[in-house]
Length: 169
Image (cartoon, rainbow, N blue to C red; front, side, top):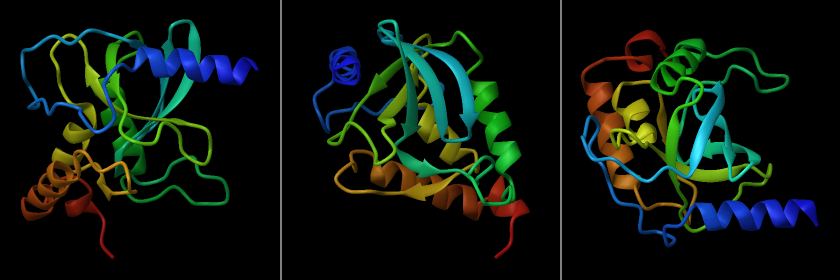
């Protein structure tokens, strides 16, 4: 019952309609209404937040950073750097605006979301991809920003930045 209640609170807090997340250009100066606060960066594509008094683990939709904490998996090339970059974007206490897509949670129970810094509207998922710290990970039906992620990672690869410069194979 507690898990169901927590899920309802989160769904209410992440108020955008499925598939309607607005694209915000990295570095934009528009402020977004916060609905979560960053508590901890777990790795490059997973964060812990507090939403209406409920702790949630959030998997950032559309991107995949190299592993640093996956059980029985060695730390992957550029994983620590991706985690450090996400941490630099999201210090503890950062106000966030989370938006969902079609599916609310993954098979591990993590909330699936697009994250925006509330103070400046920066689209965190996209910035991580744009700066070369992630590959595209599209899992239908959560595809609202797929084209943006593809373009960002292609540009990073073409510019040979981030993991595209450091990791071969």
